[in-house]
Image (cartoon, rainbow, N blue to C red; front, side):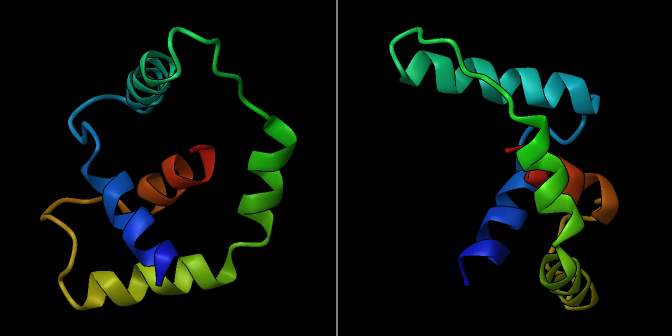
Length: 85
């Protein structure tokens, strides 16, 4: 399941930072990988992903029930970050 792995990775990316700092961190990293190219954000895509994410919410809660996430992981925040990526 690709989504479960991506959700887990999202939970592990700079978890102590504020959400906007986590997003800027990953955006900067991707820009570096792309040779300095500007990395954009599509709000319509983000909202569409969030609105149609029932399975991802289910996956995340099943993973939480299985104690897969590090202690203190905020599932809603993790999913929001995942949808932005």
